[in-house]
Image (cartoon, rainbow, N blue to C red; front, side, top):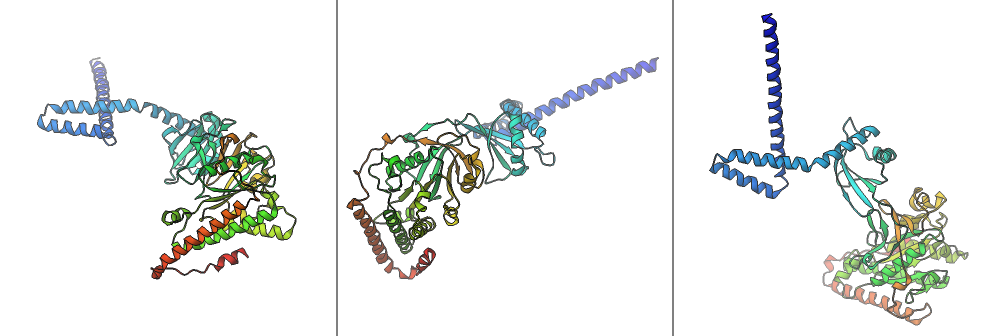
Amino acid sequence: MKKENQSLTDTLIENVFYVFGWIIGKMFGTIWYYLKKGLSVAKHNIIVLIGYIFLVLLMFASGQMVFFGLLVIIGVGIWQHIKEAPIRKMENYFNEVFTSVGLHSNDIIPSYCGDEDISEYASVVKFYSLVPIGEWLKKKDSLEMYLNEKILDIIQDEKDNRYIWLVIERKPLPDMIKWEERYLNLLDDILTIGMTSLGVMELNLNKYPHAFIAGETGSGKSNILKCLIYQSLEKGYEVTLIDFKRGVSFSGFKDVPIYYDYEETITVLDDTVEETKKRLDLFRKCGVESLKDYNKVAMIPLERKIIFIDELAELLSVRDKEKSRVLYDNIETLVRLSRSVGIHLIMGIQRPDSTIVTGQIKSNVAYRVCGHFADKEPSRIMLGNDKASTIPNIKGRFIVKDNHFFEVQCFYYDNALYKPRRGNLNVTDNSIAEKEKQAVNDIEIASNEAENKQQAKTSKTIDFDFSDIEKMKE
């Protein structure tokens, strides 16, 4: 009996010591956890680091401060732990989601890194992941179901492939966004198209010198062209419009020359090709590669020029074979050669057709704006996929393709916004011919000045035969 009582007593004592040891271990583990967390805060907070240094100095001055210093560091750790509670909650939430949809690599689940609102329409959630981007895209529909959110895009970080961004919709794009002057960029060679969930959609003329805008009747294609014409005029660009509907949709721009005759249009394009070649020669002589670089050193700066074509198919469907050949040659030459000289083509087309948009033209026009098409083929011609057939059939709603694909609500432009500055011009006015002659003379004068300057340093001149341009045209 005594042995049994002794055994029970020993067991009880062992359990008490076990519990006591567990509590002590847990307490010291917790203290050590908060101590490490308090110390880690100093890595990212200069004020906390200075405070710690001050405490260390006090500890050396007085041994009694050691305990107080440890309490301060532990207190900072507790504060940081409380601060990180929402992050831990999000980590647990996404861990459950990724486990449910099977999105992991070797049982390593993507870790939540944070989120931020990037516009009033979307937010971005960032993850560190070893799962390939292709697997993320395959699981997109499942992720939307578990998150109960619309995922607009899944993007891989360009600098570090291990980071993945989920672009989540906060609220849908509105059906109409009116143009406002705050969207006008006067400092850079950028034209704004509309609003995406990520923010304002831009056309950078230095990166994308030419553009296609495709859309059915009533889609808002002409409205985009009007908005771009307005911005070009406000930025001081020289604007030309080719529109075989006689410019009815663009009547608000009284001072923009409008061409709607084949003979006149061919002459304009011929002159533009010649000017492109003259500018290329001039840039070579000056040792520059772009209009922006040339205007930095030139005594006579050159204007950026944009030719807007409202209906490319109408222009290129001329029955006269010789006229058709000349038109195709001119447009193909311009999209191929005028990239760096500040001469641009922005071409509207109602229904893209592979017989109209040749491979030569298409391959040199990377920026595409495509409205809704019930038929998938026009979308495939413009974008290389069916995206334009899946967007809502809303006026002004387009898919824009540059490096990525973006759903855009293009700005609605009111004709009343533009106030003519240079008076009314007509295609038959002599003033246009005089203006074109003056532009050519300006280029020749600048070319002569550049050649005179180069004579003083002929050892640095590179002799280059530009006859290959003529061959390319042939």
